[in-house]
Length: 436
Image (cartoon, rainbow, N blue to C red):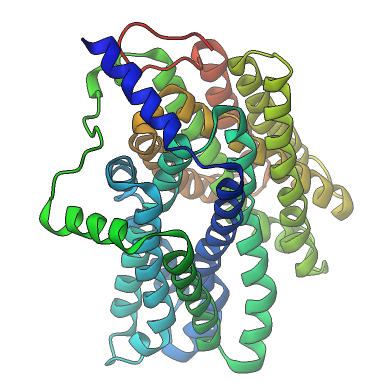
């Protein structure tokens, strides 16, 4: 009886997939949504120095506010993925974006409530992290159910390019707003754009009936027709699942280390350099690199290459080759070469979007959101530890080389696990599976 049920679920999933025009509309919308996610996330780092002056924060207190985002971010990954699998990722994304957009836009008002500025801002950042933590697991769930397998890499990598777009938008527009109108304008800008985006999604892409049903599930626990049981034991008995988690952990950890320490590395190593160069160029390179990786991945699969072969090739680029360029950063005294190496490393890391991120959808499309949530939770926690360890190594050794060595070691471990144990065949079905 189990096999016919699995076949029925696959048929239903195919019927629910987006048409080509729907896929194009949602891809553009989610690209913008991902950009606004990072726009809101980066607003606090851009404004921290000005807010510290206004509220009298020292570096330790400012660090508490900045790091508090990740306290909440780590807690809702699995929840977001499971909700996405249950009620639909697009509904989870809309509801969470509306909430974090409102909190971001209201941040200047919250900061003026009473005298406990540090407590209020820390609480607001924790809540923002909780709300944004559901985004990528819900996105993974949505794309695994709505996008054809032959197009997932391109769609996911295109949407993933929003991370660099949002970082650039806040870095450029946010800096100007900060100079012209003060730090509150940055929060109004990013929060207001997010709310406008949420209104557009609600007005043009979602039906009111579906959204009301989703709210009912959240508030009252109403039953839904979609199959919601997660095959926990079946998933975690597979080496390919653990390989995917290890690879996602290492890619997230490496990314967080570079994201956190590259600006300080350039500032201390090349004190006379222009900040806009090393803060902008690597992310400008990463946007086309992300889209290219998705196009290349889908093209190779359509040419007849096995799915797992393409996924592993993408990880060789995203974890292997990128870590080599990171190592080069610790062995050059040239500013131009350092910018090139940093751009190459950050750009190549976007190939992970077409590797491990899509491989999770290959393994378990029926519960991809849940599985991605588990993997991304591990990655976020590892990233926090990696960033702290990088600071300790730099302070102890008096050199930046150990930080880039750490990136290479972490990347190599994740890559090795995926090359040895990684697979692309489904593990969320009955024993009758199709080897991709």
